[in-house]
Image (cartoon, rainbow, N blue to C red; front, side, top):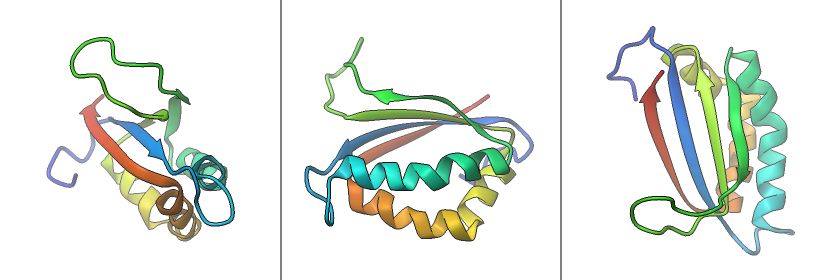
Length: 110
């Protein structure tokens, strides 16, 4: 993540498969607890969610099984780093870990 150009805008595409049971609730409940902190913190560092929603299916390529898709845009890598250094975000990360069975996060410039 740190090897690319630091000043360029960056976009992350997240695919999530949620756990059926997670802690006292469901994977979706855990993700909503995480989202309650991650969304405002993303905005605080200058980023924004471009899209969040249920996974519909694969248009081309191998069919994959996901539950959620979230696309986030950051003005630069520094903002992405600042997000992960935020104390409240780091604490909320435990909800993401608890709720997610597997994930794929892809990065693109722009």
